Length: 290
Ligand SMILES: Nc1ncnc2c1ncn2[C@@H]1O[C@H](COP(=O)(O)OP(=O)(O)OP(=O)(O)O)[C@@H](O)[C@H]1O
Ligand SMILES: [Mg+2]
Image (cartoon, protein in one colour):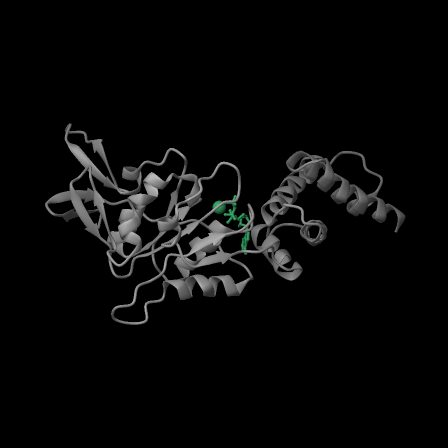
């Protein structure tokens, strides 16, 4: 189904996202999302969970994975400060024949196909854009397209969730929107074993020793209340691995461990900051002594 007709207006649907995002560990939060989406029987409504947590803890990955777990098509919508209400619903474009074509947004495509819509980084878009989704998120379960002049009802299987970011370039959402984006599911930094499994899943070709050093670094950072996340760890390891290959011919007298830590230190300095590089420097000094 590529198009559908609603109240005599033809809508072109978009395709769901097929991305290699697999959630590892922290099973509890997946269960929380799935519970929020459950419908217990006639008259019950699914909830629209809001996933929150520090940058890079896996909010987007969790949202996508939870949707795939239900076996539904998942549509990711990236919210930005420029997102307009019609971007969330239906936008008109001019076709080859010079006629107007109505394009359904990922959210509306999910509504029609009974899929999952993930509004990613939802608090980057303004209240005005959220307001157009207000009826979708209560018992009405529809949206109105001003552009196409139609009302679009959600399929009973349609599910919605959003992720929210904690940084300066976000909006404070009003209460009537907040109260429709419930429950709030908090994603924390993972435990050591889980964090290692996440690194391993994202970097299956990495040397075990590199993974161990990066986990040591991340766990120490979480304990110290630093903001470094598993994404930072993945990026450091990814660059260090490339650097090891590219610099394979360089003279180094310290052995494999020395070289690995040296590249991790360089990667941490380039990807994060001096403080992060210092942590690997300390590990390097320990390795030299030991
Ligand atoms: N539990 C996990 N399982 C698998 N991968 C994970 C997990 N947690 C984090 N990651 C990995 O960490 C990286 C960051 O994840 P993601 O983009 O989902 O985080 P985020 O919280 O949405 O970040 P942002 O705050 O920037 O939006 C991705 O590469 C993802 O694969
Ligand atoms: Mg994200």
